Length: 518
Image 1: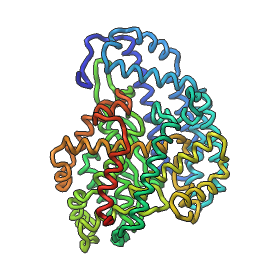
Image 2: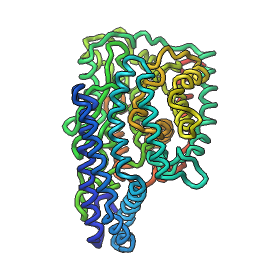
Image 3: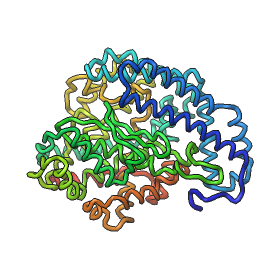
Image 4: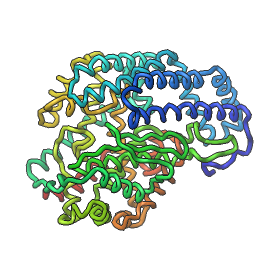
């Protein structure tokens, strides 16, 4: 049965339930637009009242999501053969029930306070980051941590698990800290061995060309060219600048990307744009604009992502497996020279390929290479878990960060801006989100191996700028299903195997050892 095929019977209760989901989605989309505006164009004097607006919208959406009528309809639909006999519609119902069970555990005042304080907190974070002043942000991190712990306590720790698991489950359903630790520990060991071998015995590539000065406007034009080649529809989205890049699937036909520029290291903006573009392709590939017998799919789980691990797999695949490939640079370099005024004419595609595939420990997560990136995630996971266990106070985060960073990366952290203030996630209260980046890398590598098997001469097509077949493969295998399948099941369906770190390690070994000559 195709994703939009009509069921043989129509459930009036499920139709009413879908209508309510659509109404809730409209409120959430307004909230997303308000949040996007705050991160892009809102002027400083508007921030205080924006927090009130964000809090109100979050509370309104929560009250709609937890209305007793939804509980009644869910109970009725569970007994309705028109719903339960259709696997796709039954999955929709299953996920609606999950969402309702979680939402009804949270009091409206907590939801409102999280949104309001999170809006205020992110504005303080921006200034604190600019000034490299953790003391300014510290009280707000304490507030957001306390609120996040209250939220987790409302959800409750799973049997045999820990409180942190309750928020992990929001972003990666079913995941636990213990399971993630079991993946991270051997992965960290193998990555450390690879990094040690490359840095001790290899010859690092020349990266001097990455310091080429390129105007931000030209970088923006270049980024849009790459987005179009990836298949991102700029008539249904846009690219703007912000302090910390993000993607927002605001509404059907409206997906917004952001990036950031600096005159040197133009590849930082390029890969930031491709990363968010991967998220954007997922948002545009979800069936938000489609309808079935129950009306618009928008607002229903069938039109939502399968979890942040899968979402991050899409961004990391485009950023790393495509954007850092030799094939990509073979295609894009002439376009870069045309747009950027021949700034890179003295360099070859091979030189740029090698320069963008180093193994060099660095301070900033979003600017780090593929091999060391996961260590950044492991550091944040370790700190978040300690905060939730109350083994660490928010005020002590900088010292723990700096000490652990030196142990893991061998680098001294010079200031808070390049240390614990570099990410916006904690200002928003996104505790439990970071591990999904590493899971996304694992999913991306496994999906990539399967895509290469199923798409004839994929790398040859990328070398010609022909990337739409990859986008369509991702849409056909991942995007179109929304939340119909849990992430682990989706991975098994696509690749025929459970999630494993082996494909990522094969990818890194196969790329970096030849570049470093070891």
